[in-house]
Length: 539
Image 1 (cartoon, rainbow, N blue to C red):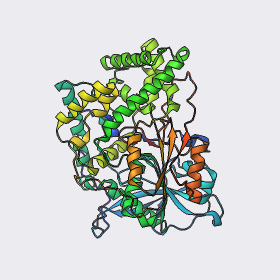
Image 2 (tube, rainbow, N blue to C red; image 1 turned 135 degrees about the horizontal axis):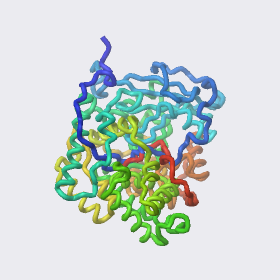
Image 3 (tube, rainbow, N blue to C red; image 1 turned 90 degrees about the horizontal axis):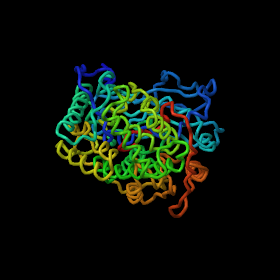
Image 4 (cartoon, one colour; image 1 turned 180 degrees about the vertical axis):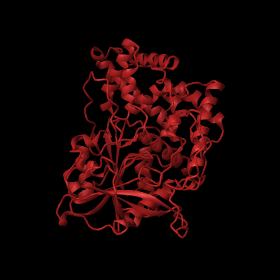
């Protein structure tokens, strides 16, 4: 008899009628999860060549069909992993989705596989490997088969869905800025609904949806492709996953590039405190830029005036949600999502300008885009991983106090990040996070922007301190989350030199930020679908 597949053998889902809030402590960055700084598929032919280049066999992969819309040059399959890597003899397994875009160079140029992770935790990768490969520097795509894999619980892997879509997509969400008992009760009630939905959907999987277990899956992906050592590229949460993998298997790492670095000492609850300040500072950067283009946006000629325009819009939407569904919390989420990359600033400013001028939230709603079933699955995995990875407060009063304090210090974005999430009720694993010391790791490359709001620089410095063999490239003045690929020639050339030739300087070094964007009058179209998650805590 085959072992159960948690994508298909689930506890029946209970009816969940209440709404669920989406406070950003539940979205560490997801993402953007979601997030390479730009839409990397835009520069590539969506179909690609008719056939994939020749690639070595993958003895541990069961090849099958790909998600709809995957380029023909990308092959997709699955790898089986133990439910619990600490108990490999347990017959229960999970399915891990993988895909490969073969190296484009000659056989003599090939250096193995390059596995990537776009962050979250929960950003999907299967179906994106070929598009991402075509966005990489040519020397990298000639050298490596680019490998995507979906985390357990996500997309083509054994899947976790904590809410039915109707419940997930209800709006407006409870206002995360309310500090009254009634307001806090609405937020925590939604957190409970989400947590109970996770427990009903896949109770056996939840305690094993940790970064440690995912690192075990990553090692099986390496072995499934017949490789003795791993080449790895991780963004945001992916930086933490790579560091944990390196701690567990330093002898199996060949090259590792980690970009937009998670603070390994603050996993995950306290990371939100640093993010609240960092997003507040990045909002100021956006306001300064918008004020410089007041002729275009008419939101104010100074930072103070622009922020006041933003506050007025936030208070108006909280009192009267646009179209009855776009309220204060939705506006907070939209703003945070568009602070991940300054390339989004023109659209955010234009949409806010349209609302300020006409009181019509259509441009803001269009920029945010509709909720999707994929968003719900991302959020489910995000919540489950961050709740299982490390203990979080189990007292609603702690989150209520956080809301009061962070709102006072950092405004509405601070209160949104402080809002209670599923971890209030979803403590499925209380083991402490893995301590990192980098022992035995080969040279590792780190990249970090100094103004990154999702993974603040102070945390990146702690990751650097935890990995003595690393060298860190600092992108001075940049607040974009995700630098390698599209962060400028200085960054991309350095990343390619490391991945292809192993080149690193003797000391940490720096690159300049790209210039700020030019103003733009466009208000429509959803925000960039970045490859790393756009929700906060990580990304």
